[in-house]
Length: 204
Image (cartoon, rainbow, N blue to C red; front, side, top):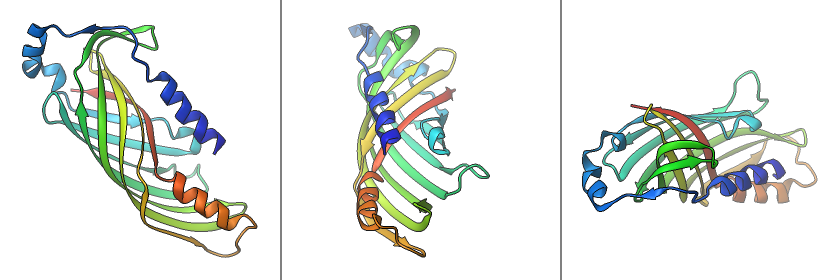
């Protein structure tokens, strides 16, 4: 949980307004014709690597403001002792972009987009706690907020954080139950709804 908290705090801290220039009225009028805002992208979520998890995604840009985002992921085979898989379908609404921004105040990008996110997710986990195995599966309906930095070369960086309460959660110990089993199960169910990411992607 401590590692999870640190990652979430890192994402929140780096989600800064930063410097940039608002679009002029003329630029706003050209927004719908700018191919930079119609780019689809393949994304690799690196936020879970510290937990031996991976995530890959595809974002389909419907309009400059609307996008569909599908992500699949789970435990990394041969590395993680646990077995996990999951899928999420997200709807993103992008706010007015800001141009000439800097990522981490150092790397200049063409635009920065802030977005809000509504999603439906599912996960299935064969996990381990205190040498005891457990099975857990649940659906989630959640919301989040994040930002995407866009470079004209096609490279983008996105980060987001959100939450969706577990729906129809099923938690079951396979063999023995550890001393803190009940409290662990309750805590895990509540925290499993956290949704966060830091993705590197190529847009085209």
